[in-house]
Length: 80
Image 1 (cartoon, rainbow, N blue to C red):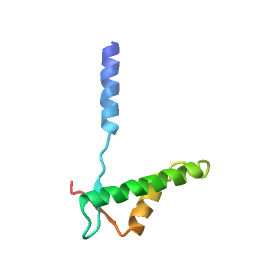
Image 2 (image 1 turned 135 degrees about the vertical axis):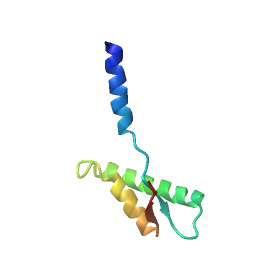
Image 3 (image 1 turned 45 degrees about the horizontal axis):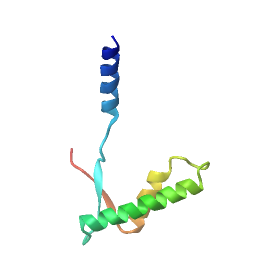
Image 4 (image 1 turned 180 degrees about the vertical axis):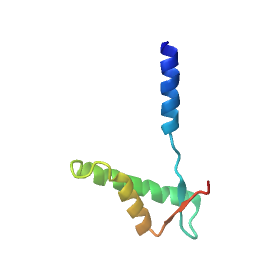
């Protein structure tokens, strides 16, 4: 019976796993440059979130998005 519960639980959890629905683009930038810029924005978001933990604990993705947009990137949704 435990095996059934584990199987159901694993199925439910795997349904929650998602991949990004898009990617960042900027004309003239390579994929490596984009990844470097995104890593920079992730670091900025992490440091800002750590500094203001009690304010808004889930604002990291918003900070990342704003950082990438300030650097001239546009988020493009992948076709489904």
